[in-house]
Image (cartoon, rainbow, N blue to C red; front, side):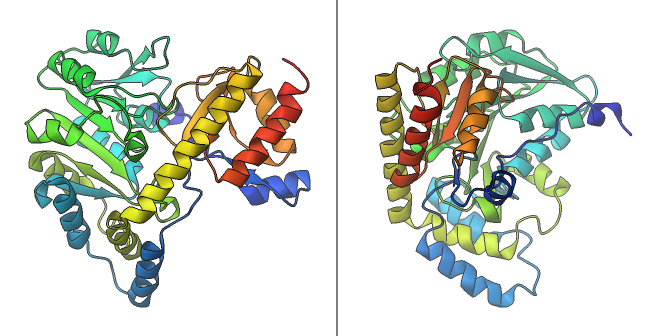
Length: 364
């Protein structure tokens, strides 16, 4: 087997609810670990899946024509500039396969989403990790400083995963100006919909239309509530989209996913409510932690990182015994933090009560 594959760290998902119930003998478990939409899919997406299920004996549209048309219309781009993936994870993987060859390198922030690492490792190229700055944001000047003429891909998540921090449009434009001409900047906007209130918000689509060398990644897994059905999309030049389509698996986005995504992209009411519930939850956690004397990382995603001032694994396990699943910051590169997905009002109440019992109540 290839050595570069064996050195990779497998992706670690949040613990499933049923597993925690079995292991700890619990009847009630709240999962706030995987950045899922607590409202679930919208009614329009559910109805579309039910209708599409009647024809699931047929192969899906391999080109995803209707979904690509819907996305192209929404963003004002050509359908030749839209690519579909089995989640945006697949598109990260495909970009690595399409762009990377021996001698190349990839630049990312650290910590960052582990699938960026995988894109480099699978192609056996150098991965250059640049630590985030003291505000848990991308250090764009440092990232530009390690790029050279063999840097093919730079990944920038905005809002960032796992911290939830954001970059401004002006910052990203200056960063793009400093990159080598042959370098593609992948702007991963999985949590974009949650950042509507950001001043000087990044307009990645405008950058693409202006001819900048960028690839934009979006997903239906977060704000649209379709994580279980796996569908993401990318916006890029027609040349990049064509290359990815040549390399990807046929029928990579199933018919139910395509139908759900078409319905979801037009369900503005569900999206607005999802964003509202998320912002309310973020503010509630920030306020509670501030009152208890714990720092949080300013987030414009659907999760928030809390500095627990001790081993994040210990707090993770303590909350787990209370029936609340969060993520330890240890595997995320934030050892004294936990990351908490934003749930419903009731779920956030259970988390805060459990946190008060096992952390605030016992001191740190």
